[in-house]
Length: 95
Image 1 (cartoon, one colour):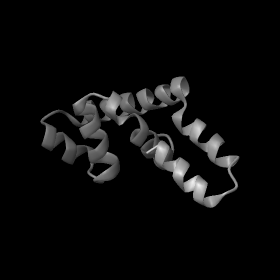
Image 2 (spheres, rainbow, N blue to C red; image 1 turned 120 degrees about the horizontal axis):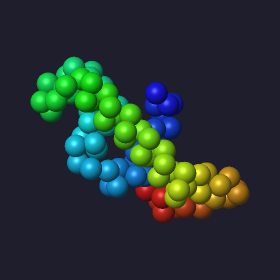
Image 3 (cartoon, rainbow, N blue to C red; image 1 turned 60 degrees about the vertical axis):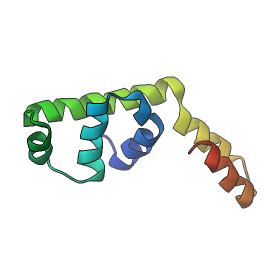
């Protein structure tokens, strides 16, 4: 799996583009720290299906970032701003 921190950051940007079940599965695994088995029990689908769904979501959010580049754009903008107060204001744009 890709870097967890990077994936969770991207998830924050693109979660609204995901299907409800995909969003729930991702949150359960990455934010709630549930195992594949626990998520499987909660959603009533197999562990293998959960694993496939997580891989699908990871690929989706990575493809959204590649196509749209919100995280990359934010990093570029923030890297050229020297004023810390302005930097904090600009960060709110990307929230």
